Length: 69
Image (tube, rainbow, N blue to C red):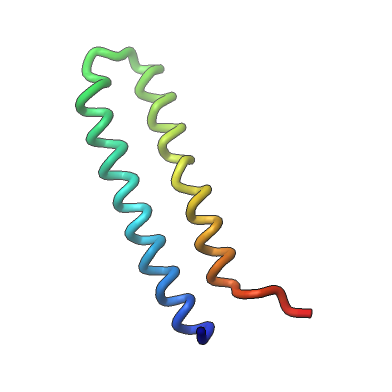
């Protein structure tokens, strides 16, 4: 697969990943964190804000292609 196509597909996947994770995290927060203290909100959004990084790293690694020797 050409590098440009791989990077285009990866960019679209990362955008979908970020938007999807934000939507899911906010939906769960609205449903469950209504009565939680401020530190509960802080902890929840800090963790969910970092969770999307792991799949994004895999997508970026795929976008880079095979290792050059």
